[in-house]
Length: 226
Image (cartoon, rainbow, N blue to C red):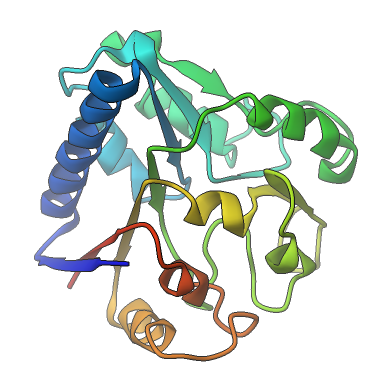
């Protein structure tokens, strides 16, 4: 595994670079295999990336987009990652891309997991996965100590509601780590300290981010906004 670290002065510069990198990988996948699969994260930062990526010259009709994780809320909800992707990425030429949602309208992610699994199982290998991280070292909706961290079979894991967060659906760690190219974008000194800890050997149940660096086959590009 190769880790490529880059530092940027602001989110705009990092987002511009990441969008260009993602577009390059998607174009190469289309050239090599006729199609491309992109998995993206939600949150505040991705909108900066999405508005740049959607303007990249791509054969968007050959691209399939899915989510790294999703809060179990309708796609009209302000906290929906699907809404974020539809509002900021799937616009203009990029609207031609196919979209595979994680949320299916069921009462809970536990009820929705079989249908979500069936949707995701039809996808080819993810060509590029764009990840963020939390100050607790989580990525996707794989939080420290959660059972979802140890789901090793299938494509998605239901993450029950807790007093701290709503119920979610997450891609499994093996599916994410199997992406041909992994990208991690974060900002702030607190997250940088967590990132440095995650680069050291240790228990991934304490710092789930370690899983990205324990897999041996696929490169990880790390973009830090300092």
